[in-house]
Image (cartoon, rainbow, N blue to C red):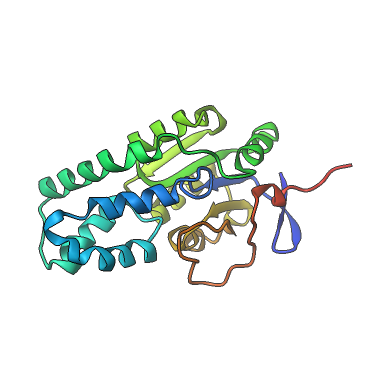
Length: 221
């Protein structure tokens, strides 16, 4: 499939999409969920925690919650406690995201990719079950070949995706809205398209940025 990247047309054989803030308009809901999750006994740490969340958007909820305890409270939570806190976050977050709409142009772009029969992966920091439920509630499950949640992290998953599809990096595209997405694309040398959301801008230089994914489509006669 030919797409407009970095000012020219490139042939792409595989597209990997982040979910929150790229496919679905869920970033504001996720931010609110993290704010609500902060334990009542530590509300004075909320703003410091939110700075961590915003700087690391695109990482898993487990990653952020573990950082809250390790970096702000200087505690070493065991896995059972950490799992319970992640579950508490999920109970807050999923109802907020349940009615999320598609971002403008995203569904149409994915449908164009589906028509072109190019493989379509979703790679998210959301755990597998909530991720599948989120896409199902938006009517998006059948539009993708593979849906991958966390763990593992996105860089490791990108390595796996390219290996199992036997796709070279220079013919692979990752579309994301956060630094974690860009890092994952850079990790394997794939093309990256930045689709801005409420998340902080990636740290490295961006060569392709869009306000609507349909801007990537090559017009045909």
